[in-house]
Structure formats: C-alpha cells, structure tokens
Image 1 (cartoon, rainbow, N blue to C red):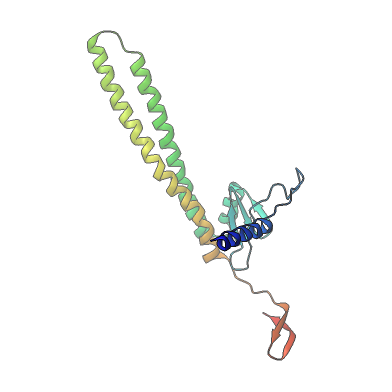
Image 2: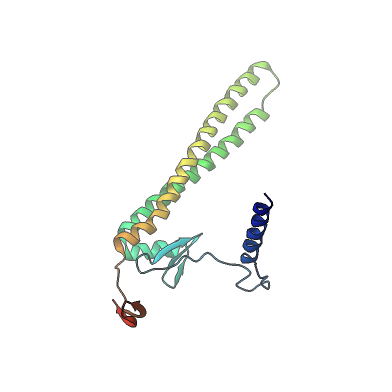
Length: 184
C-alpha cells in the first residue's frame, strides 16, 4: 500500500511539474491567449467566436457576409437563411417581453370593483400565455438560425474552396538513410 501511495505522489509531482505555467506580463500576447485553429489547405475558412478567418484575413459578420456573397452563393444563401431565422427568433423574444409588459400593465391598472378585476385577470392570463409561447418559441428559432449561420463555413469549405496543393521540400528518413523529398 505504501508503494502505491508513493507511486501516486511521484506521478502527481511529475504531472504538476510538467504543467508549470510561467507568468506572463500583463498586456503581452502571452497574457491573453487567443484560440487559433490550425489552418490547412483543406479548410482555410474557420470561425472563432464572433470573427471569421480566411487565410490571413480576419472578418466580422458583415464583411463575412459580403465575402460569401461575392465568392460562394451557396454558402451565402445558407448564411442569409440562418440570419433571417435568428432575426425571427429575436423578434419573438422582443414580442414576448413586450406582451409581458402589457400584461403587467393590465393587471396594475385594474379598478377595484369585482367585475373589472375578473376581466383584468382573464386578460392578464391570456397575455401571459401568449408571451410565454413567444418566449419559448424564440429559443429553438435562435438555435437553428445561429446553427445555419455557422454551417455556412462548412458549406464554403466543402463546395466553394478550390484546394490547391502546394509543393514543398522536406527531410525524410527511409530504409536507405536520410534524404530530401519533394512533396507535391
């Protein structure tokens, strides 16, 4: 048992030492690491957060939409469809919140007599149900819209990107020894 505990402690010390982090000065690029996926010739267009990257070009949403419109109509249609769906989701959310406010106003402006209070309560329940329906419907609508917008990157890479192979020299080892290889 002592050997197992000792082994675990040694392994933990090795892993901790391997994970040693050097402190970076504030304001340096090392202090704020960015997610930079590896760009290959197979998939040059990728998205990280709110930015789109094509080779060395960094684009925001509007520039990305113009880029797709000019270079790949198929991906642009997917992006536009997703944008319209996401806009509909935001409209549903806004309508639901607006109807919630209207329902609260009808409840607060009721008169003290019993007949108007019952009518006001019915109106409140109806408006609250409609608002809840709009707010619930906005969730999948937004998810589908943003998913379609993000899928336009895959469509561009699959349908519109011309794959060019670049020739390069490399150092390779073979059965006969080490040699220079020209890959294309």
